[in-house]
Every structure is written in structure tokens, then in C-alpha cells.
Length: 128
Image (cartoon, rainbow, N blue to C red; front, side, top):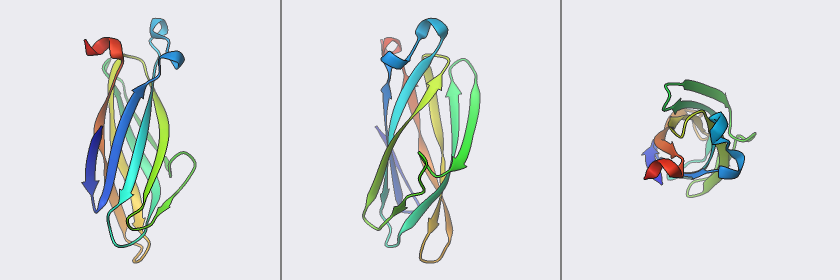
């Protein structure tokens, strides 16, 4: 698990290889990741959008941007957290992801850029 705090918002990431949805013979490797966003500030924040960088060990670099996460734009009260699970497909057994969330302070409407820490996606067979 990796964690980073930016602008008073904590991001924790856990990853899971999905062997049942992967097909190594066709270079298809599916990973799930669980993100926990904790609001350590004294004001509510809204997750407006996301920007991901997804890198395979074969040199492929993709960027994904969009509104919210998993179809939601959650509002997180001070001291509360929000958790979601999503996934990424790679064309190699090893990769990594990192990015940012654009959040809004709902008291003063100020935009916050919150870092998503870099995390690695590694198929278990490559960990030896």
C-alpha cells in the first residue's frame, strides 16, 4: 500500500492482480486498485475530476482523464473518507500508475490539485 497527503487530502492505494480476468498468452494483464480518499481538512471537498498516467513495462504510456471516479463526484466531509475500486489493463506483467484529482473546497470554491501517489502493478509471477 502507498499513501500520500496533498493539500490536507490523504490518498491511499492498494493493488490486486486479477488472474481470472487476465490472459498472459495474449499479453493481457488486469489489475484492480482500491483508492481510499480521506479528508484531513476542516472543510468539505468535492472530487471533480481525475487525470491518470498508466505505464506498461513495454514502453506504452496512456493518459486517462474524466469527471469524478467510477461515475461519481463524491463530496467528502472533514474527517470522513471515500473508497472506490477500479481497474487497469496492461499489455505486460509490470506497470505503474500515478496521477491527480482535481478537488474543490466547498467553503471558498478554491480548486485543489491532489496527487495520487505512484503505485506499481506487478503480476505475482514477476515478483520472484
